[in-house]
Amino acid sequence: MNIYENQTVKKLRLGVIGTGSVVREIYEYLYFDSVYSPLISVEAICDRNEENMKLVGDKHNIPVSRRFTDYRDLISNVPIDAVTVNTPDHFHKEPAVFALEAGLDVLLPKPIADNVKDAHAIIAKAKQLGRFIGVDFHKREDPRIKEAKARFRQGDYGKFQSSVWYMLDKLMVSDPNHVPRFFATADFAAINSPVSFLTVHMADAFMTISGLKPLSVKAVGYKQKLPSLKPLAVDGYDLVDTEIFFENGGVCHIITGWAIPNSAHALTVQSARIIGSEGLLDLNLDLPGYHEVIAGGIFERNPLFRNFEPDGKVSGYGIQSAGKIIENMIGFRNSQFSTDEIGKLMDPFSLGFYATLVCEGAHRSLENGVRITEGVVSGGTVNLKNLLEREIGKTESDNYYKN
Ligand SMILES: NC(=O)c1ccc[n+]([C@@H]2O[C@H](COP(=O)([O-])OP(=O)(O)OC[C@H]3O[C@@H](n4cnc5c(N)ncnc54)[C@H](O)[C@@H]3O)[C@@H](O)[C@H]2O)c1
Image 1 (tube, helix red, strand yellow):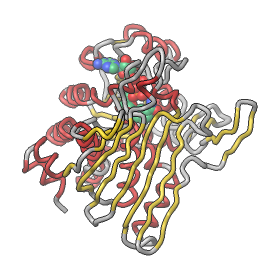
Image 2 (cartoon, protein in one colour):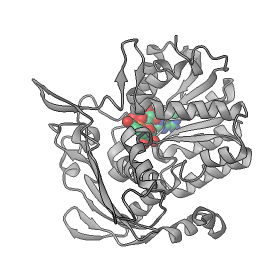
Image 3 (cartoon, helix red, strand yellow):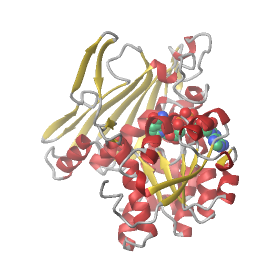
Image 4 (cartoon, protein in one colour):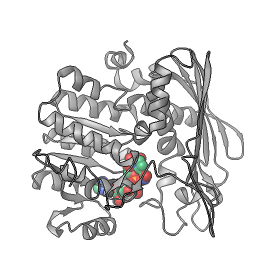
């Protein structure tokens, strides 16, 4: 028995909308096999892909009568307190807003949405109705990011000047020909991009550490490997280099892709360097300390992210990040937070609003970019305040940039 099981707190009755890859990789453990599981009761699930839903439903004994192909039926027919919206980024707003309007709280995996208009609509609806939303950016709970934030904020590295981040997934992640396919949907890498799937993590991690707001963005994109895949080719970017200019004059490059060879030492090859006027910091994110040599090759394992404990529980910052949001949601529902505390939990930084803004800026930059050579696009500079103003109007956009 753990401390959570001793609590008399009423379980959060949860509806799970979307049962694809993020559920298999992270949330299944959160819901059913983590220290947070005694706080959660999965009351119903929904996926328009019945095969995906059956896998999760059968494994966790969800009654057939509690499985839905339309999220509106789930929300309208099952008594629940909250939903977790695990659908692709471009389809977060509709279920989230529908749930908020039904009086529910909402947990979203990053990003809050794939564009600022949707992100703002979700935030505005939650504020208008006095509901709680949380967005799970698991890197925020990585102990290395937390340490970097504490030291950066106390001034150990001086004034921020420049930073380079990279996050490169193995090709098997974006390749619809890989068996088993990583994403539930075959066209995931064409509909999404390394920006929406990966840059968003690094942009949020940098802003978590620095607390700085982004002012402009410029991107260069490469479509050279994905279009050559066989038999299914993908019309999508292999790699995107996004340059972000921040309010203090510092610059950050975030290089992301999902086309490095499957022989890489980690599913995600990633690192970061932050340079300030008084020092620098290297975050060797793909070297968490567990190095193995086995018949299949040499690999880095990351038990910090997901750890299988001897008692069958799964821990690690991948689980803890969403688990803490569930705890906060329960605290909110039990009126344990002051107005100031709620304001902090739901401020634009906490909800990852600026990460969505950066990514939309990068996509816009590429859309209006110049073709340099076959498969290479160089985008122009996108002013993020102007972009936001165009999308949500001046009054609302000013609120996101006031100090
Ligand atoms: N895969 C990861 O490790 C990971 C990590 C962090 C965050 N995320 C985020 O999680 C979200 C889901 O990503 P994923 O990787 O699980 O994608 P996925 O394609 O594997 O799964 C998405 C699921 O949503 C379902 N779906 C789509 N439209 C639907 C609708 N209208 N109603 C009901 N179900 C619908 C699909 O059928 C699919 O099963 C995205 O926002 C993604 O950015 C994923």
